[in-house]
Length: 519
Image (tube, rainbow, N blue to C red):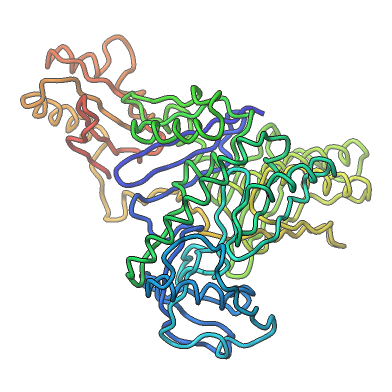
């Protein structure tokens, strides 16, 4: 499978698209000023206790207090609390945990008011970003994630991913890590560590220890609430968790980010750093790679299933769960053996698209799928195995149940951040009773260009809807050519799939927006 990573930075927003064989499978958006990302470490103050929920609400600087359940405290909560207090009071003057006094573990089935008091300071980690009206979900079980290892303070265990099957390899990794890990830390060895050299693992360990030292220094600054460790930026995090030999290119339109990703690859895979490319063109990066078009096609209530000759999905969202209905279109009539096989084929294609949709939209919670009826038990089993295979590429924790008596398949999927919502419908331009005629808009474009040309000496770029672009460039005597003959200056016209019908924007050669209009 050919994987491509597209990273577009515009204004204060970074969009990261993961393409698999040219198909958009994941889309992440990250604001430059985003402060509450999964994995970030904070020092917060307990605002109030909620004994009826067996939880506490913690102020970490967000408008809504973060939610801390007793089960998320972790057995070593008292040790973390002592470390935090000693560090702030300067009693603890080193990040090393070699001789740190470990406190007794808290009762697994205890209550929050026995362990936490109002105004207590806590070292915590974001486990779920703010969603809707809810604040962030947090945990006091801190873990620092690297490429090959996960470092856990105040834990001496060495654990290995269950996906590593070879007993010899398990023993090699365990022996190796136990020889290099610092005292007072536990380690989880990730699946990607299988077969890696000592130097790679040692380097990853050193980076994680450096992160812990940074956390320690930031805690000493004694600011509450404050962020004491930032998770890697989204692009680096995706590379960390997904990068393998399947990646053929990483393209970015921001020079600084290109350098950061090259530096990151220099550490984890120096032989592959040349796959990172800087993109510099007036055609937007997401437009060039057809991402904007795929976004319009992939979001919304109805989603077509590729190569199915008319089959489509209907995706509905409720407060409690997501519902997906598979419709065959008009090409299946029940009963015949041929159509039973065809129903299985369409269901398999639908399962592939559903697995992609869950990743793309980042749908979490309960998902119920109503496939086309299949009386044959072997067909139902085949579909179930196919869906499980397609879902293996999904990094979010999930569980798939076998088809029920009614032919429904239920999925639960981890929810860490708000679901991706992209509106594929446009506002009614006629809502006020009238709208300027399209031909008038085109005339206005011409007048606007004439005004701009009097001030701007460099090249001009007109971004418009693809339909309008086709109209402006049609024929030898096109409107674009007439503008050239009239103003003695060529205007490059760029189609934009994401634009409304009569929307246009004019940019100069430095990619600065000069003027824009939207109906």
